[in-house]
Length: 120
Image (tube, rainbow, N blue to C red; front, side, top):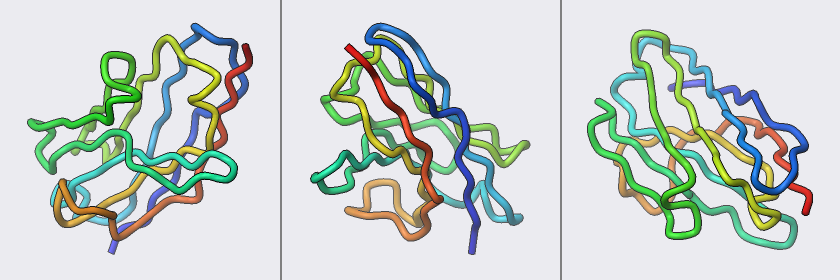
């Protein structure tokens, strides 16, 4: 089992950048595929970025491709999401997640979330 905690959210203007961090507890962090999901008001939660357990493989939703970069540091049990050129439609609660399979439809463990608000 792994416990996850996000940080780095906030209120920014369109075009700005933010970097989210996810700190994980437990010795098995490096065995999990990781991802960032988000949930906007009235919408379902969606995974927008995924990274393999080693960090060698990454995948993005079309809505964030080219603007967001996911990365991880297994030595520090930490994952990141660099978000550039933010848009108002990126406003959501962002969650980090861990799963046994990178391309699973939904991951097994989720953090509490951090709010990202992008004003126009």
